[in-house]
Image (cartoon, rainbow, N blue to C red; front, side, top):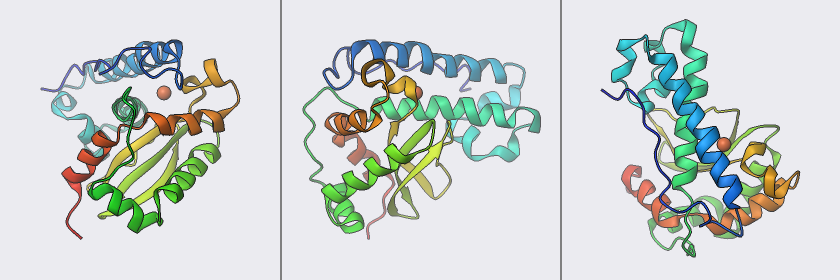
Length: 207
Ligand SMILES: [Fe+2]
């Protein structure tokens, strides 16, 4: 039984990501926005016992098992939970070294260099119209950068999200106001590459 879904605590303090991300933002983002998605998801499936055994990933990848009247609500709220948990897990208070492992080799092979990767992910994050996320995903064993609107999640049997940046205004407005590019630039200092690298290793097949 996966139900009820539980709020995952941050693995760092609220002020641990300063100066790049303020304590105030992280507190609101985790304790209000993310928690609301967890609560709403639990509320939606309260009366659907068949869904209470499904994992978060199953709720997002098996819409055929979800009654049509709650399919959109599940997509939005399970997505809101999944996306925020990945976003928070992909950040770290440590001085994040650039990747040097197999993920680094794969990034170089796919994008030419870590600088190109950063430029492409930045562009994707900055140009996502309105609310959404930019992602590094592994799709059919290939690294790709994409963006998605709202709380859509790029997850499927052959697609695994590895890293995401939340570009909803609630993720940066209190500190950066309308300056999304500055937020994106600073966020690169926070990427927990050891977590992202381990995530990659858990799903990537040898090329
Ligand atoms: Fe968010």
